Image (cartoon, rainbow, N blue to C red; front, side):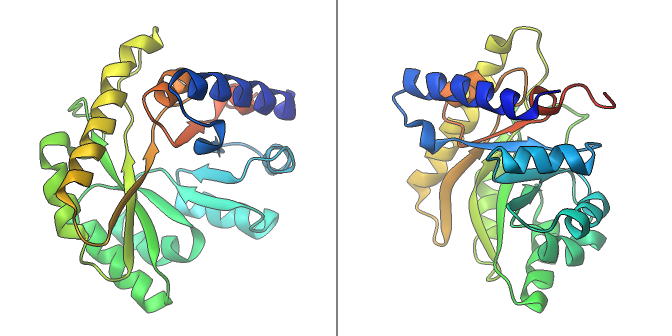
Length: 229
C-alpha cells in the first residue's frame, strides 16, 4: 500500500475539484481517518504531509498519541460520550461530532477545567437518517445559537455524513444543503460563532464535497486501503 502515493493522488483530485468551484486547493485540508490503522502507516501519512488525523474513539486516539506523539492536529470525528469529554478536551484539537446542547455543555465544563478553548463543529444529520447521529437540519441554527455563549467552546463550522451512494453525484444535494445551512447561520451573525469549516466528504465522494464547499475532507480507505489490509 503506497500511502504517500495515495495522498498525492487525492491532493490532485482535490485541487481539480477546488478549481472547478473557483476555490484555491489550499482552502481544503485532507484528514487521514485512522480507525483500525496501524501506527506505522499513520506515521507514513504524517511524513507524506497529512496534517490532520481523524479518530473515532477517544481510547484509540489516546494510545496512538502516546506512541506517535502530536506531530499534527488530531480531530475527533466519532460520537463522543459525555463521560469521555474530560479526556477528549486534552487529546484533540477539534471535535467534529457535537450534536446536542447537553454534550456541548459538558465539553465546555471539561475544557474550562483543563484551561483550553475547545474548537468544535456542529454535526448535522442532513438526510434525517435514524441510524446516524447529528442534529436535524431544522434544529441546527437553534443549537448553534444555544452553544455559542459557552465560554470554553469555539464554534468553527459544521460537519455531516450523507447517505452512502454508488454514484457520488447523489450525495451532492446533501453537501449543498450543509453549505446553504452554513450561509444561513452566517446571516444570523451569532456572536462568537465562526463558520469557517465544512467537514464533509469521504473516500467515495470527497471530490463532489469539495465542489460544494468542503474545507476538510475525511479520507480513510482512499489513503490506507480497506480496513484490515
